[in-house]
Image 1 (cartoon, rainbow, N blue to C red):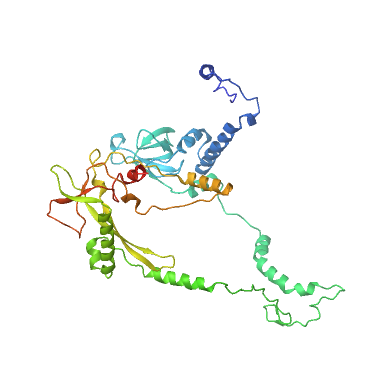
Image 2: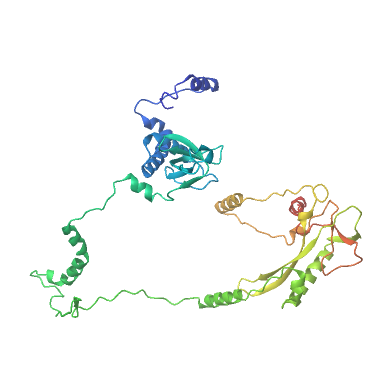
Length: 404
């Protein structure tokens, strides 16, 4: 622990003694022994120092700068130390009509227990609490300009000429480059005749070096491009997905959607998902709706039209329509670990998919659902008593795991 006087007190010593801790102090001028704390102080005080310099505030206000650098609150973001003007209420004015209506202040921070600003009254050099405040600046440009000496930077005429001649000097060097080779040894370019045209300094006699070009090799699999183009073309013509049975039957693909509905309905009936019964008194009936989708092949062609019956599980009542709903799900971290171990041990990994897994769970509660739209039988009071799980039920994932 740091050897500062704020830590050398009976409270800290008693606490260490009670907890069985050994109290050790760092040596004098040995900040590296308490590196973590010292590095944290450096980070904090660096921010404080920048805030003080940018705002032009005196060094004695560094605790206020430190307190301001906390998590943002719901108030508007303001610059610490910026100039602002706090409104003076009528009750505190010497003359309600002629007295000043605002006082110039500096922002010190925000109050935790009040929705207001904590300010420094510049004239009276006192704290001030105010809610109605107007700020003079919204950036640090004005603050930094006040913190450093202002005025134009003077340059000598020689410096100005040198800067202006940089571009011209570079062109002269390029034009005079061939003349620098005035040695006894002849350069291959010295025997060539040169002719200068105008002020451009372009030498006609020198043959320009051709720019290297990379050779392009023909694609060994041109058919892949054809497949990709076909996929993009087909994706542009994606079939719109209807949002209701009425929309599906009125659309251009009504025949395909009707076939998908029949396939799904017959599969549910064959699986014994429900039985038709009259609705008992005092029981609520759950609604249902059809969800549509189109399955595409990897090349973009249509595989099949899909229809799925979904129960409106958001209307289920806890304790009546469902009880246990938890189902374990593997985390991605566990899956990655499993695959890594299989790779290290050179093992085979088998993957399987259970088709219509949510439709295989057996229900234990008495749940009543209205008949699917488009496939109604019996009178108006006839409903479906679910015997097996359906998409949308809250306990559907739990029943899948319970059946294992």
